[in-house]
Length: 211
Ligand code: FES
Image (tube, rainbow, N blue to C red):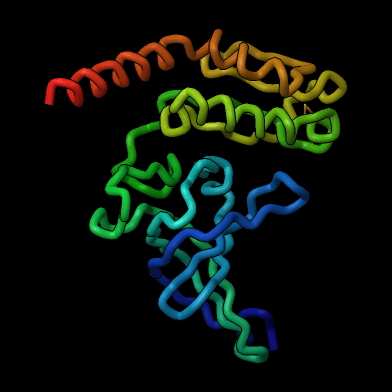
């Protein structure tokens, strides 16, 4: 019996609450753990989704996932692979906020406005790439920029000995970056976005105080 006779492939569409990411080797995003009506389930993400997934996605977010379901007719094992992940109906979002899941997979999503590219291959990771990724996430979150700026893992940038390597949205490249330098880089290269957030906050505060 060939692999194709053994497997039954069909489409699936499910909704569930996002529980956690499945991460391999400490930094490689592989899939999502979801709480569905049938219980907890693991959905592997297609490669194009992994590269652009919003790693700041809040736990508990309702997601709708569409993809391919493979049933192993011999063992009964079911594998789910997502080709599209979207925030589920607004009525299910308990906080009523817009959730950016990924720049791929949701045809209505606007293109990402800014992307920071970070090499995620082993030489850069060994030289502190994981810490740099964490520092980027935290610096963006501290400045309320998590939904404005995407951190995208890339393949080797051919500058392995000078890792970690990253490229800011304005295409400035940095090598031998330390996690402690990340906040200053964000302030330098995303100053316009930071200013915009601050202006927005001021408007919200003054609107609240008027009412
Ligand atoms: S491993 Fe990062 S540049 Fe080659």
